[in-house]
Image 1 (cartoon, rainbow, N blue to C red):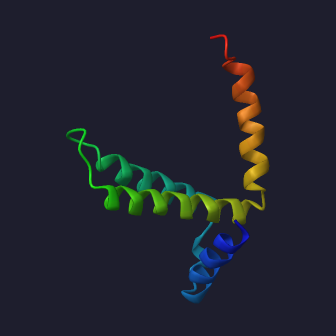
Image 2 (cartoon, one colour):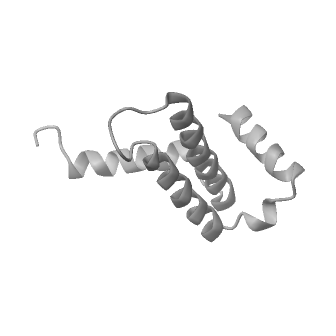
Length: 93
C-alpha cells in the first residue's frame, strides 16, 4: 500500500494538483468517478472489463488521495467500519 500511495502522490505532485485536492473536491471527484463506474452497467448485464477497471481505479485513486489529505489510516478506518457493520448486521440476520 505504501508504494501505491507514493506513486499516486508523485503523479499528483508532478502536475501541481495538490492545492486542488481539498476534501470537498476529492469527495466530488469520488462521486463523479463512481457515477462513471455505474455508467458501465447502465443498460444491461454485459460490460467492458477494461473500462470497468479503469473507472474503478479512478474511484480508488481519489479515495486514497482523500485518505492522505485527511491524514487517516485506510486499514484502520476500514476495520473500524467493518466492526460497526458486524454489530449492525450480525451473521444471524
